Amino acid sequence: MTGIRRYILRLALLVAAFVVIGTTNVEAQHTLSLTGGTGISMARFYPSEVTKLLWGSENFGLSWRYYSPKPRFVGAFGLDLEYLERGFKLGYTYTSEWVGEGDGRREIRHYQYYTRRVNSIMLPIVWQPHVYLAKNRLRIYLDAALVLSYNISSSYEYENDRYPGGKYEWKIPRDNRFGYGLAGGLGFSVLIKQVEIGLRARYNFGYSDILKNRNKYYSSTTDGRENPFYYSPLRSPMDNINVSFTLGWRFNKAGFEEWWVPRRKKEARLKNFNFSEQSGAANAPSGGRSSSGGSRPSAGNSRPTTPRR
Image 1 (cartoon, helix red, strand yellow):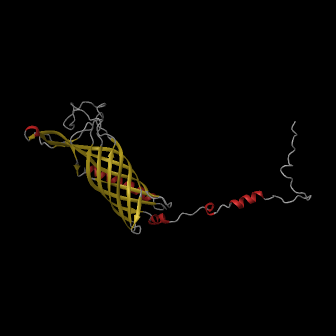
Image 2: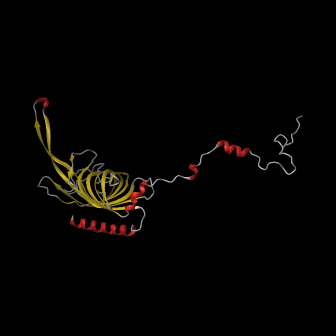
Image 3: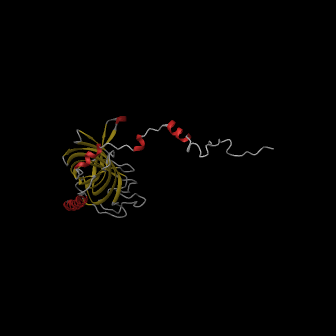
C-alpha cells in the first residue's frame, strides 16, 4: 500500500507541475485541487449472490477544472486522477438455524464472508455545472463523468480463520485489469480569495466486470482459495460511494468575475424594421424624368403584343 501511494504522489506532483507551468498567463479559470476521503464499495453479481457493503474504501487524488472565460457559460470541464479502493463482501458459506414450529417453521442462514479489495487508478472525465451564492463566495455544483479505470493489485481474505487470505493473483483469462463506467455526484466549495475548500460526494457506477464471464472462463475448480466462485458470474460490475474533502487553488482570480459581464447585443438586433419605409423606397422612381422631358413609359406599353387570330 505504501508503494502505491508513493507512486500516485509522484504522478500527481508531475501533473501539477505541468498544469502550473501551462497556466501562469491564462485568461480562463483553472483550478487544481487535492482530494481525499472514504466510502463504501459493493458488487452487482448476476446470477445474484449474497453480498454486503464493504466499508472504509479510501480514495485520494488530484483534480483539475477549466472554466471558459466567455460569459454565460456556466460549468466546468475537467479531469481527475484518483487512487480508489474498491471491492465487495461475498457470502461464501453459511450455517442454518431453524426457528418456529409447524407451518411457521423457517430457516435463518448465518453467512461467513469472503472479502475482496481492489486497488484501482481512476480517470474521470468530468462536466461540472454550478451556481454561485453568498456574493460569489460559495459554489454549489453537480458532477457528471465518464470514468476509465485500471486495476493495479488486489487482496482477499476469508472470515473463517482456517482459510487465511493473501495477495490475489491476477489471471489474464479470468480477471479484467481495465474498466469503465459512469459517475455522478454533488458538492460545494467555499471561496477564500484564490483558495477553494469543499466537500464532494460521488457515486461510481461500474459497467465493466471485474471477472470475465463464463463464456471465456467457465470453471474455477482449478483455482486456489483466492477465487470463491465455482463458476464465473455472467456479470460482476463494482460500484462505489465516496465522500471526499477538496482543497484547491485558483490560478486566475478574475476568471470568476467574468460570469457576470453582460453580453453585447448585435447591431442588427438594435434596428427596428419599418415595412412601409422599405416598401416606399422600393416603389420610388429611380431617376425622375428623362432628359427629353417625357415620363417613363408604363408597363402596358413597354412590350408589343401579338394580335390573336
